[in-house]
Length: 437
Image 1 (cartoon, helix red, strand yellow):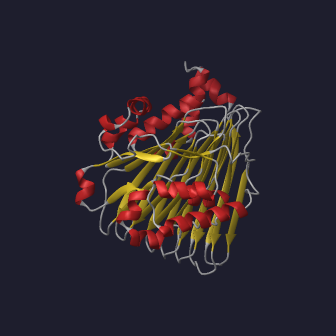
Image 2: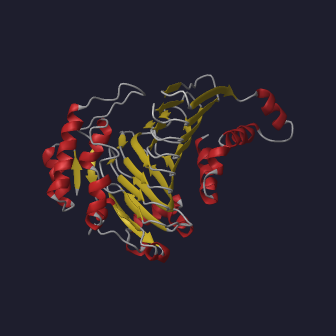
Image 3: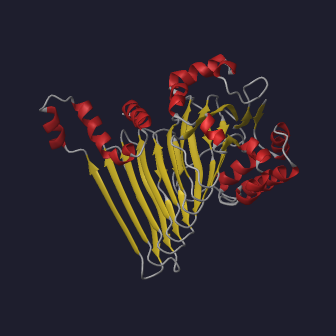
């Protein structure tokens, strides 16, 4: 089944294909009206998308069932996933979900997940298994009139992950979802909802790739995360979209008392990326962290950063942004820190570092920082640098080739981000960095 272009009848067809309730269909149609009425973003890179040519839904499996055995997945798909190292990485995880085009095609969990009553499934199965959780959180953290692309996702969402972690539960190994765009003009609109109940902890990893075509593809995801009291969630994302993909994502977490939310965000591909993971620090003593890297090469614009909204007392946030520009690329930071008048004794620390590798490239910093009480502190520092010829000369004088010396300097520049990843994903990141230089 393939749906090209968007209107109410096509949205109804997607909903019918998924056998959804009337409430979900109403949510989709309301979201579509919002999409029509909301204009394009007035900031950031230029977005030139012909919405009538986008493929909004495409399924691949003959029976559309989610498989738990790779031998039941179509051979061309498993061959590609093997090539990308996705299947091999599964042995390091507590569970894995794989989305190909519009549908989740594979899902697995180790016995530990089931024994701890953790729910890890597709968004569609989540609606059916946990309607009370969805009525409380779905579309509440990121509303369907938030921006044009959040509204579009809400109208045509398909696939994605739902995770529920019950109280007093901790996973020793991460869960992972992998997303692949493999067709021309494809739009991928996964929806992720993670609920970490009180006194629990989880780590989730997201990987993304796409086949490169001359026509533009669109990735417009929405991620909603609820972090309960004294709980912790870490969400690591490494996206390596092809250079024909518009990557326009809305990610937000609400953090309750003594909770911790950590975003690890790597942006290495795409034609245009606009992504600003956010933490709403609602509870007292809650903490938000976002460590991100952006690497932009020729004909790429990476516009990324983070948003930290301090509402509770004694809240803390840290934003560390590392941007690299080469061959005429533009990798920029855009962020917002807001400390409310009632968020006394709070602190926010923002550090933006940019490495520009040639005279053709550029980087901008667009901070929006506000503090509305006298008991809190907000610090912002930024630096822009080029690779020192003296450093290169020193390394080359010791037998290191120039290209390898540049590579080592860049890997050192993003060391904080690499250090926060599991070992096997830090190795993968190193390979991606090398392939993009």
